[in-house]
Length: 93
Image (cartoon, rainbow, N blue to C red; front, side, top):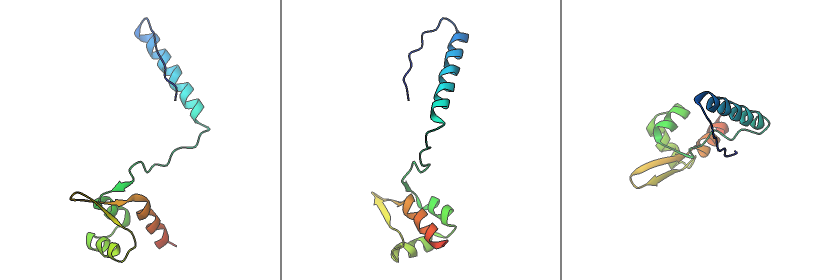
C-alpha cells in the first residue's frame, strides 16, 4: 500500500483525488491473492459451538479425547480456529 500526501484547494478537488487513489489501489490489487479470512486465530467456546453445531459438553468431551486443544489465558478458555476447522474437515471426509 502506498502513502499519499494530498494538497487540495477545495472539497471537490479533494474528493476527486481520493477517488483516483482508491481506483488505482483497487486496480493494482486485483491481481494479488486475497489474504486468508481467519484474522483471529483463537476463538471462544461460543464460536466453536456455532461452527461445529454441538453442545458445550460435547466440545469438552472432544477436548478430553484429544481431537483438539483448549488454551487457557487467565480464567478464559480459547480454541485455535485452524484446529477446529481441521477437525471439521476431517469429520466430513
